[in-house]
Each structure stands twice: as structure tokens, then as C-alpha cells.
Amino acid sequence: MKTRQTTAKTTTTPANQLRERCQSHFETLRIPVDPTALDELLARAEKESLSHLRFLDLLLGSQADARRERAVARRIRDARFAENKTLEAFNWDFNPKAFDRVQIEELATGDFIRRRTNLVLVGWSGVGKSHIIQALGQKACVHGYRVLYRTSAQLLTDLTASLADKTLPAKLRRYANPDLLVIDEFGFDRIERTECSQAAHLLYKIIAARNQKRSTALVTNVDFDKWGEYLSDGPLAMAFLDRLVEGAIILKVKGKSYRAQQIQPPEDEPS
Image 1 (cartoon, rainbow, N blue to C red):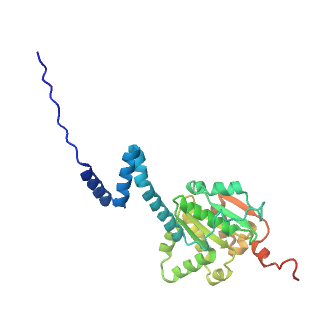
Image 2 (image 1 turned 180 degrees about the horizontal axis):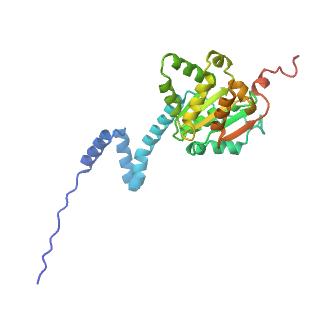
């Protein structure tokens, strides 16, 4: 008895048609693949017998990297840092004992933001606290976190204005939302606090709204035992401090002042 065998006829789509379909897919998905670059990569894949995964990595990797770089640049721009400060540009040798480099580099991973832990830098003026906090903020942007940088004076000016135009709830939501809110120069805002009798209450509202929900980093030259005097309301200062430092990472910084060093006359010149 003979067995009848049948062979299924397979059809293949011509390479040029597949290429056009793929290009159409890229356009539909809004993946900016240059047709010339695609042709060059197809020729390379055939010549070098690239695996499917390697081909995809070469095709999409550069586009993905470019998009990630644009996203990081946008987050850094939206954070509105005062200066472009990086850890790579920090002079670790000037104050070798002021900062624990290993600890700072651990903070730069952003894990404290993921854990919603606050960060407080307390110390003398001019030792590099602002540089460090802005550099850490930039690293957080690289890791995908939303960051907002403000000096304490800027924050109070903005909140005081919101009292006048009745936009305080919206402003409080704005400051409550970022993954990391950086409040720099806490203690250099005497004029703004003098002009707003509710300054302490406004700052407290922000800290309370973020408490255990988002990370807040505060940089100050005011020792904790002086906060009652600084905020002019002892009980409120204690409540503010309790919510800020509960479970927080606290760095107390001492060292020489960069700015003082820069304005000193050379040794061969009279002072």
C-alpha cells in the first residue's frame, strides 16, 4: 500500500516587502529609524550572521539611548538647579574630612529616594554642601527621579505670593509631588521670613505633606537647637524638625570655606 505524501507549499514574502513593512511599523510606533541606517544594518547582519537579538540591539539601542538622554536632560532642566554641579567636578581633596566620599556615592545611587528617606546637611557655609546636594539631585535625575530644587528664600517667596493670589493649594501640591525636593540655603532667608508672618507655617505644610511619602533634602547652616529661634515659633519648629529628621540621613559638615580661600590674597602680597 502506497502512502501518499503531500508537501505543503510555503510562501515567503520578498525581502524588499518585509523591509517596507518594518519601516511602516517603525513609523506607526514612532520609532525614528533612518531607512539608510536600516539598510546598512541589514547588510551587516547578513554579512556577519548576526543573531536576531544582536540585530535588534544594534537597531534600537542608539535610539533608546538618545531618548533616555533627552529624558534625563529634561528632568535636570525641570529641576531648575541653581548651578550645574556634578560629583565628578567636586574637589574631594580640599576638605578631605568634610564628606565621606563612599557615603556620598551611595547617596548618589538614589536608594534613599526609593526608600522615601529625608536627607539633611548641616554645617558651616562655604564647605561645599550646595555643590554636593545639587550633584546628588542631578544623579537622581539620571536615575529617573523627578527632582525640584529651591532655595528656602525662593520657596517662601513663591508660597507668600500664593497667599495673595489664592493659589496656595496648587503650590502645595506642586511641592508635594517631586520624588526629591531640595531646599537649599535654609537660614539665608531672613528677609523673606520677615515679610511673611506665616513663613514657618508654610514651610511646615510642605514638610508635612511630604512626610513618609517623598524624600526631602534640606541644606542649612542652622544647628538643630537654633531652629526654634530661627522659625520664631518653638512648638512649630519642633514639629517641623520631628517630621524632617525622623529616620533621616543627617550629615554634619565641618571644614574650610571654598569662598574664603578664593578671596585670600596670594602669600607674596600684603593682606
